[in-house]
Length: 376
Image 1 (cartoon, one colour):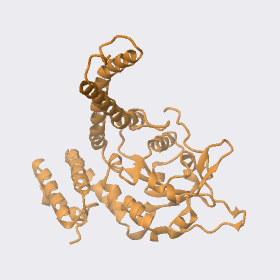
Image 2 (spheres, rainbow, N blue to C red):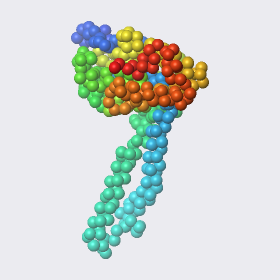
Image 3 (cartoon, helix red, strand yellow):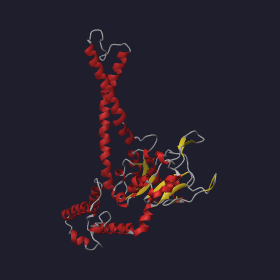
Image 4 (cartoon, rainbow, N blue to C red):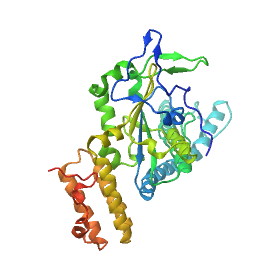
C-alpha cells in the first residue's frame, strides 16, 4: 500500500465542549458526534466538504465489467492524444524555428504571397493552435486524471490497482463545488494554507428541512438508490468519488484498525464548534422498519439456494438486471419493477430453473426482494 498524501490539516474528531462565548450548542439532529472508531479515517478528510459513506456489495465480476468501460475509453483517448502529439510536436518545433528566422518547411514567404493566401495560412494555423489547445486542455485532462489523479489525490486506476475488486467495498463520496456556500469563510492556518474551517451552523440547524438537504443529500443516501448502484455509477453533478479516502478506508480495514461495518451508509460533516458529526443513515433505516436486515437475509438465502443448485452466476445476473433497471432515468415505477421481474424470469428459464417453484420457498416471493418491492 503506497503512502497516502494528507489532504487537509488534521481536524478534531471529538466535539468541543466550549466556545469563546460559552458552552457549545447541542448537536442538531439528525447528526450525532462521530464515534471514536472512525477517528483513524477522519484524519484523511478535509473540513470543507460533505462526505457520504456506504458499502458496495455487488459482485466483483460486475464491478470489473463496469470499470472496464471508462478504462477502455481513457485508453482510447490516450492513444488519440499520443497520435496527435506525434505530428504536432515536429510541426510546432518547425514553426518556432521559422519564427527565429531559419529556413523550415513551415516558414511563410511573405514577400511573394498575396494577402488572401497569407490570411488563409494564418487562419489555418490559428485553428490548429485552438484545436490542439482544446484537445489537451479538456480531453487530455480525462485520461490524466483517470490514470494519475489531480493535486496529489489518488486516481481511479490507483484505487483499483491497490484495492482491486472485492465483494464488499467501501465507497466514499465527496460533495462537488456546490458546497462552497455551506462553509465558513476562508481562514489562514499557521502554515499559511487557506482552508475553510467547517460547515455553517445554520445549515446544520436547518437539517432535513433545508433545500440543500432535500435536493442534494437525501436523494444520494436513499436506500434503494445506494443499494442498486455500484460505486463507479454513483458519480453525478452533486457528488464525486473520493478515491484517496477509499484507499485509506481499505488500508485501515486490511491493517485491522477498523471494521468494514463501520462504513455503513452515513453522512459526515465537520463543524468548527462541534467537530466531526455523522448522520448514521443505515442505522436509522434499520431502526425504522427492519427492512434492511430482512432484505439482506433474503438476498443471502437466494444466493445460497442458487449456489447449491450450481447456478450462482444466475444470482449475480439478477443483481445486474436490477442495477440496470434502477439506473434508468426517472423513478423506479411499478411498471419498471414488473419489467425487471420479467427479465429475471427469462434468465431463470434460460438456465433451466423453474422460476415459480424457486420462489415458493421465499417468503413474499421475488416481489418482496430488495429493490423489487412492488407496491401496486
